Image (cartoon, rainbow, N blue to C red; front, side, top):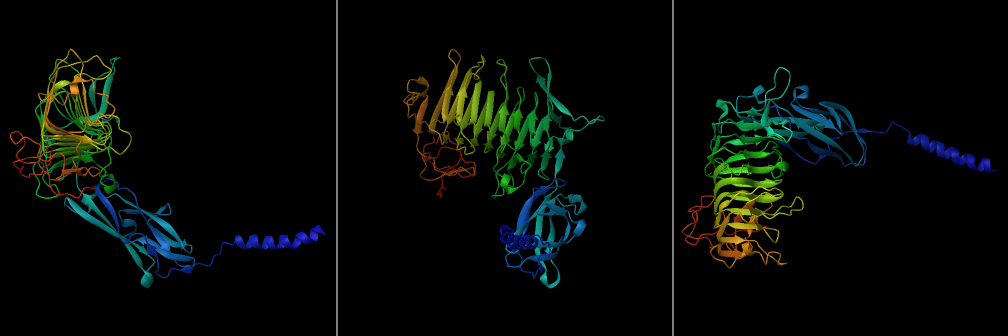
Length: 513
């Protein structure tokens, strides 16, 4: 009896299974009613012969019927410089693409273009179209990419395929320390604004030579790349004030990922390295962004005066570790912003001589936990026995601020000179737990060291996330600078009033974000 009861049930299940295993679904031809997540796909600007990032969009079948798209193809077919993949399957032309009811598929696009195949211009728009179906049912999604010509600088390979390197020194076991890099030739020691420069590895200015960078130049660095000034060499970055937001006269150092999603990503390249013995560096209207260490000046010889630098109307921001790391350096900064770093915006260590006027040192790091203040000043290096006199650290008419309670750390070693002075400035120093109460180095009542100092009043920066450090008219930095020592114009060329503001920017009415 049990058999006779189960048999009809098994028969029904068997028929159902057969039906579910059919592979002859009733697909209807596409009727030209596809939906798209983007009407046009813009692939971000690319350098000639450098592959783009991959862009994606979705194709929707919003009908209740399973459909087949007879043809999906690039209009230029196999001659197109774009590359396609549908749901991960690569190709330039696809036929009979099935799409279930109320379902979607992903389209992936990327490109690599040699600008010389199309034009002699410095940049041009490369375009193609993805066609879905044909005839009356034709639907299209345009593809557009801006392609820039560039000058590429990179280490050469010898006959054995070994990449050129730079000797940095030797380790404790007398083994050579080398990095992938090369010395710039004489004909590469002037960088113009004619074309952007793309650097792979470390480009080094040779001994006794000067690298001159013209106003409006753009220098892009691949991952783990940077610029080095060797012994007795010099870098002159001669940017100037721009007339528009395009910053056409400013010099910009940044990573070579041009996608907009990378515009504020820290740590894309190493940084600018001014070695001990290099000298007379000048940076005007220059931005150094998205490096590991924006600007490093190293010196571990107490008998050396270190590298020398003058920087004005410039910005260093989005450094994954430190914005400006100076060791026994001689630095003069005016109207300069150092903003957002994983550790400190600026560290001045192992002594040296520093003069900062109308500068903004700030840190609102949001990419992880930050433990160090925005500014650290010391006459030693932690965990070493090295010491050197801090000849002077003069901070005038500036702002030191951030999202921590303490944004200024003075870390001297006794029996070694430590000379410092802050005047007419806004500082973030909220010692809520009285950790520094007994330290004589933070006696804000001592006007010979801290003169006309405002503590813990918000600077009201315009947008710290987007590195816009303009200040509002109600800022704590308003009208606290000294008229006799403040710069005549701010970083944007705005004339300072008779009651000038502290920091790199003169205040305006802002909508604070």
